[in-house]
Length: 98
Image (cartoon, rainbow, N blue to C red; front, side, top):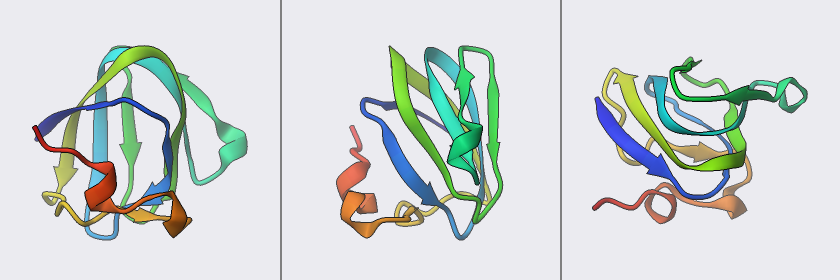
């Protein structure tokens, strides 16, 4: 379990080793899973569930800060972020620990 913030749109990616469950604590934006045409809004209190290997994205941040309580099962390795377009990022370049 971890708490994290996003400060910019998150490009399409997936995780090979875990399911990702995000509880929205603050902020507003949009997300999609498997199909960009199915983009939907999220607000505090929503629960976003991304099964392992499901491509997902947060294409728009509408109100920041966007803060999530994340539950990854099993625990997500820091390098288990696979971008659909590798030019859009790497796990180490996208995630900043504080």
